[in-house]
Each structure stands twice: as C-alpha cells, then as structure tokens.
Amino acid sequence: MSKSDQKMEIKRLLIYLALSFALAWAVFFAFILTGHQWDGSNPNLESFIGLGMLAPFLAHVLTRLITKEGFAMTGKDSMMMGISFKNKKWIYFLFAMIVPWIYFEIGHALNFLIYPEIFDPEGYRQYEISKNMLIFVPMISILQGTIVSFAAFGEEGGWRGYMMPKLMNLMGTKKAVLIGGIIWGLWHAPLTCVGHNFGTNYPGFPYLGILIMCIFCTSLGIALTYITVKSGSVWPAAIMHAVNNANPSILAMFTNVEKANEIMANQILGFVFLDIPLLILGIICLVLLCKEKPQ
Image (cartoon, rainbow, N blue to C red):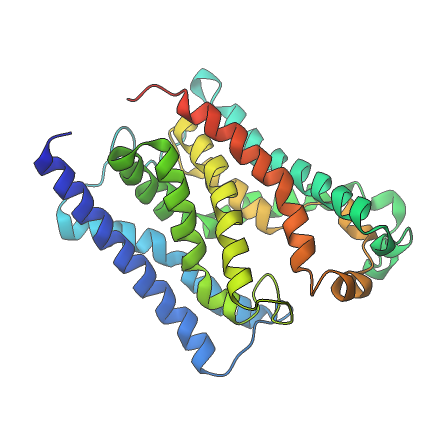
C-alpha cells in the first residue's frame, strides 16, 4: 500500500469511527438523559436502543459518500453485501446459526460446575414450558436470530463490512482484531453504564462492565471477522450476531435466576464464565485468520 493510499485509508477509517460513535451515542445518550435505566422486558425501550444498532452501517454508507469510495457490493474493498454458496460457503452460514448454541451450552455448563447451587432441575417450569419441548428452545432462538439478522446487519454492515477490512489493511490481522474489539466494546459503553447486559449492582461498576464488554466484543468479533473473510459477505456475521443476542441454550432454562443474581454479582461473574468458550473460539478463529493469504 502506497503512502497516499495509506493516508486515505486512515482518513476514511477515522471518518467512519467518528460517525459511528456520534450517531449511536446520540441515540444512547438521548435514552440516558431522559432518565431511563435499561429494562430488557420493555419492548419499547429495546426498539429505541435498537436504533443505535443502525449507526455503524449508516456511518459506512455516509463515509463512502463523503470520501467518494464507491459502492461495489462484492469483492475487495466492497460493502460485502453479496451472498454466495459456491465453494462450500454455505458452511459459514451454518456455522453462524449453530456455533452460538454450542458455546452458550458449554458456558452454562461451566457456570453450573462452578456454582452448582444455581442449578434448578425444575427451573424450566418458570418459563411455562414442558420438559419435552426444551429441545425446541435453541431452535426457536436460531430461527428468530436468522429471521431478524437484518437488525444485526446494522452493526455488522459497519464493523465487519467496513471497519475491520480497513484495520486489517493498516495494521495486520492480530492488531486489527484486538483494536477492533476494543472499539466495539467502547461503543457499547453508554449502555453498559445504564445496566445493559450486567445491571448496575456489581463491584467496579461501570468500569469492570466496560472491560468485560471489550473482552467479549473482541472474542465474538474475531469469530465474526473470520466468517466474513471466508464467506466474502457480512450476512453470516449478521446471522451469528443475531443468534448470539437471542441466547440459544437449553441449560439456561435450568438456572435459578434469583440465586444466580445473588451469587454472581448481578450476573456479571456468570457472564465472565459464559465468555470463556467464546474466548477459546476467538483464539481458534484468530489462528485460522492469520493463516489466510492476503487477497
């Protein structure tokens, strides 16, 4: 890459990041300044915050307009919005749908191993579901995540569709996934400060929550970047992001939520152990990414 190309790449990246944070944080702080705390049971609040998820892709489009970068749908330096199942690329769509289920089940099993008192063999009854129907719980989450992946595309169309290719061009894969994960984690900071994901009643609030969010975003971001690179499309990442947000798990149905909140500092410790399988997946995907030949 020539010096002039590198300068332009940096310029585009900085414009993109400024727009991504400004657009999303305008929504997030409007939520905060109106006196709200996060309440995941309120669909109106979830819809309001969901507007912030559109910011990364909107910033992507605006940056291309401002810098006259063009709007190719596929190929190098494109928006990576095309879908192809050639050369076994369908595998990455299947990966996106199934793998979150696997690492969530392992994570919940790890939580039960460390905190056996939070396991409730009758816990599923609180969800008014029969034991024979439990197998359909992750399937519904996977289906739901796949259907609503257009919402997660708001983020993935920006982070994986624009930011990560720029970072990887500028600093290589290893540094890019670390820096990219931290950026993505910090982008969530206003929501973390009002209790999204972890609540507000835990030691080190909100700084510990922001740190854990950065680790989580780095781990997940590596896996999302891997399937984007391999498929040449951001859609598998959008699907995996949405399925991840749907929390597919059978074992989760056996958690005594009241005891978990009490023992695990309002679930933040539980989130840490849930993240361990995802961290391992991220390391595996990073190794595979580093083996990829530059295009």
